[in-house]
Amino acid sequence: MGATMLKTVEISRAQKTKGVAVTYRAGTKDNFGTCPATCELNPSGCGATKIDHVYLDAVVDAVPTKGQAFTYSHFSPIHWIKKLQAGKTVINYSAKTAAMAAKYVRMKVPTVCTVAADFWGGRKSVTVDEVKVVRCPAEYLDNFGCAQCGNGDPLCARLTRNFAVGFTAHGVHKKKAANPDDAGGCYATGGNVLLHWNHTADQDQDETDAERVTRFAKGLAPRTILRHHIAGDIGAN
Image (tube, rainbow, N blue to C red; front, side, top):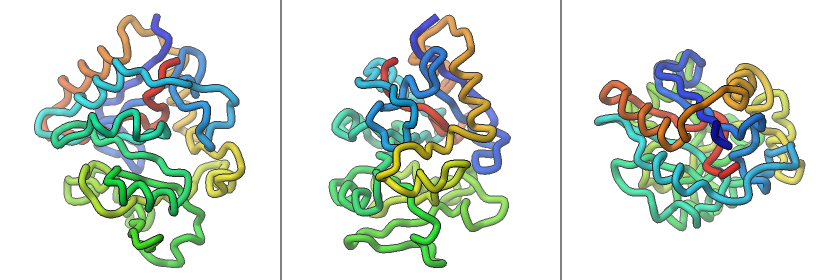
């Protein structure tokens, strides 16, 4: 058994990710074991302090044939930005605030952020420090998710873009998630995501996460969209 665990789902049934392939990642018996200990959404007081570079290389390469793959990370882009290129998994930096997201977009880093519900003011995009923050379309369109986003070219899977993608804080701790100065708020600490994450941390695994994600991506149908890490990150447990 390894120090980290990876759960793979070939066809998600969740509302937002329905029809796409997804993964969940956790430490052994520790949901936050692969997440940075410094993440403002991490309420555990624990977490990873370093990158799992073998896994990082594997996940960057884990793209279905003729398909697309993307994920999010709370680890600084300094650890992974140079690995990104066309045809690889797009890693989005999860910025603490919209202002920070704007800063990283100007640095040519694919970036997302979590915002409070009143951030949008009824709009689909808001300009912050001359950078547009585009609201995730799944938040205001019915029967819409990652599979429909961008007509098969999801916003979060676009390596080169001049905007950040914004997500309205949600989940049982959404008030904390919307306040970067209040520790906690991770959406994966409630609902069905938590059930999947708990199962990930408790499972037995006879291969490394790098081996599993490589095998999983290769076995997916051509043109599949793969969203790595519904919960979890690229850290070493």
